[in-house]
Image (cartoon, rainbow, N blue to C red; front, side, top):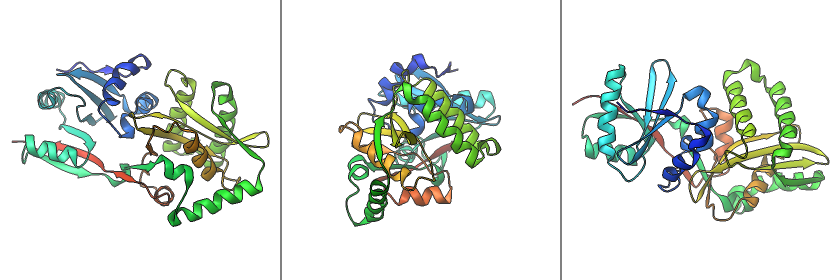
Length: 298
């Protein structure tokens, strides 16, 4: 049996030594998300056979594992996961990025796994330079929106620092009042994750930005590196009454990110039509296909 340990803040260096080195781009395996959503997924990890592997409990009957990460013996890890899943009374389900996931299992376990892609959880990954510059005909509407904001408001951008967190939380509280967070489970869960992340801003190594109109914060965002060239943008909140605030905080944040980040992962759309439309409108460079392999037997 694999002894899985709960993901804690003190595990950041160990976990990221695997995730950053092996080029992971999956937002679910961002250390920030692993910690911030711990209350919901019971994120656990183990180092086995030279690989890092995660275990998530999505509900009482749904236990899933990540594809092993690292240069060790991945097949030996999967064999251990098979035995562990059987002993716990659930079917082995391994989540990961396609097509690599499917190719690996078809090679090592031909005909023994079923596969499922989940479009609602595909990650939207953009070129940082595209978000920062908004060049080209496909982003003309975005440029127009941003230019209108710049002409309308007396604004400034500032990096998000711990001293500004109380002001951000004031905006978040107003946002939740307007969107009924206490009546919508998914929004309430996001609120818990956001509050955890901001409470542990320094420990998580967050980078963020704020957008001000006069002396009021009208938008903020934060994230952290997912790997050496991909930055994960985890949260973005804005006052919707300030037209263009979302578009401008998006652009300004991309402008101020270190240039060694080629990509920005802005996470999934969860199947929400309006969110999908908004994310597609920025024309992602990569739509990261994710799903799972499920054991069906010999």
